[in-house]
Image (tube, rainbow, N blue to C red):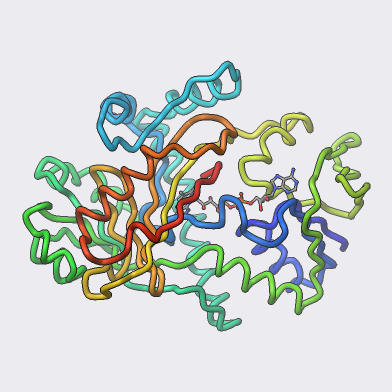
Length: 357
Ligand SMILES: Cc1cc2nc3c(=O)[nH]c(=O)nc-3n(C[C@H](O)[C@H](O)[C@H](O)COP(=O)(O)OP(=O)(O)OC[C@H]3O[C@@H](n4cnc5c(N)ncnc54)[C@H](O)[C@@H]3O)c2cc1C
């Protein structure tokens, strides 16, 4: 079958790989000049099925107000006259009940576990490397109240059989030795030893090479303008370089899928959430993290990727606005500088942002 994959991020390229393995004739279209150059470019590097949880949960509306008022807060909302923003926020609020959380979580966990197993199998089959590590993730609590409040999360982890460790200060330092120098800044943590880390852009780029070797065609620098439907089937895709047809189409345009799906009269509950990251070259490996440390207070993930530290965070709800705000970078610098002082050269870190978590 001839399949057209719309979008060359981690989802589009991974889909193309498995379709090619299944014997299909696959073409990937992307507006960028290579794979994984938008949201999949510089994410926080966590491969964390253990944390596969809906953002919408009981207590989130109250926490959100607190976060909005905090210095170095993890949430920013830039209200706009965009009905899709308000519809999405309303849907999110409606899902903040215990019942909806449990239902959504029960849907996410099997997908996350399947993805984890598939990633392991893919690694074994191809030998692909992407600065990956299998050393777990550590959620670090600066306040006793955060540590005492892990009960709900632990119940969920137990329910789904996810291995976990509740750690005191010394336990956190045993997992992340560089934290020894700042032991007074935190009280403990929750570690998920089964979680992994890795560079999403490196993974996707190398998988795209493996796809090309299996006959997948990549049409980069091609912008999709229209997706045309006839009755219940997509029949044609219009690009700035002409029309494309196939037997089947895969929509993998990340958050940009939503406007196309609305036009196809198949709306999906997706709205862009902008995140920020910086990538810090390591200057002293002993003062750098071993894996991911999630600074719970600021919701900043600090991840070791080879000889770099990737620092990612902030949920900014501002539509498809890609502008970078300097204050968000300061939040990331504050968190990593506070927990891993001397680990890397912050001034040498380029920053980036991407729409669409
Ligand atoms: C700061 C940050 C940190 C994150 N941290 C993590 C993490 O630690 N762990 C985790 O699991 N997830 C994380 N995420 C989320 C994760 O990165 C995304 O879910 C994932 O990259 C989405 O991949 P995708 O392929 O769906 O979308 P994308 O990577 O956005 O791919 C979509 C592709 O479609 C193309 N495209 C869009 N519109 C058009 C068009 N009209 N024509 C042609 N091409 C088009 C784009 O160029 C792009 O390449 C993070 C996200 C951010 C922003």
